[in-house]
Length: 195
Image 1 (cartoon, rainbow, N blue to C red):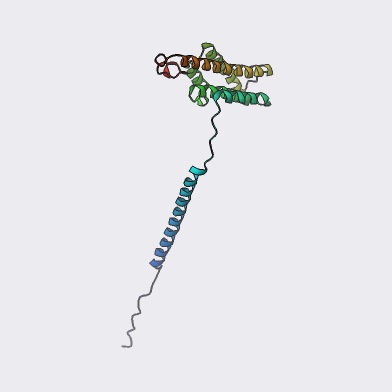
Image 2 (spheres, helix red, strand yellow):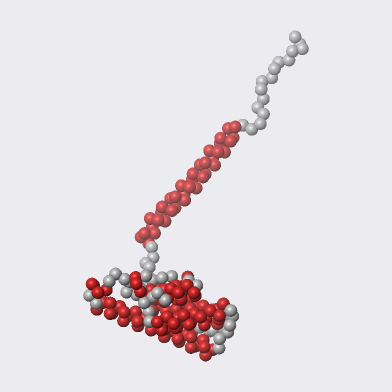
């Protein structure tokens, strides 16, 4: 019996599965800790935001804002006339858009002029705004350079145009207020046909 050797006990070969369980538990605890930290931070931020939120400044009326921007544009150096006309057009569009409650600044020139036709404005004012867009689009998009006299003239024309529109709106508001509630109807006072 000397030829028979004892059988050795089984040997562990490979990786211990306990290591994977330990790594998984530690990773899960780390992820859970990060999520808990984010949630607590968000909760604390939301809790304090209501108390310490900065006060919002009142919105400057459309007319005052437009006149301030035009006055500022008058003082700026006009080295880049293309940019100057973009700013001047934006001032006019923002004023009309805010006055008649539509997103005029986001429209193309054609969309804006088309929408303008439906507003309760004097026909001459509509023509002046349309003409301004037709004359300034080549400056803004085709690189045509106007002379200094035209630039000064356009700037004063837009200021006068905004003042004319504002006077019209004030007069319309006064006439609407002087009418009895049964005479006014349901249409918005600044829009034609309640549009």
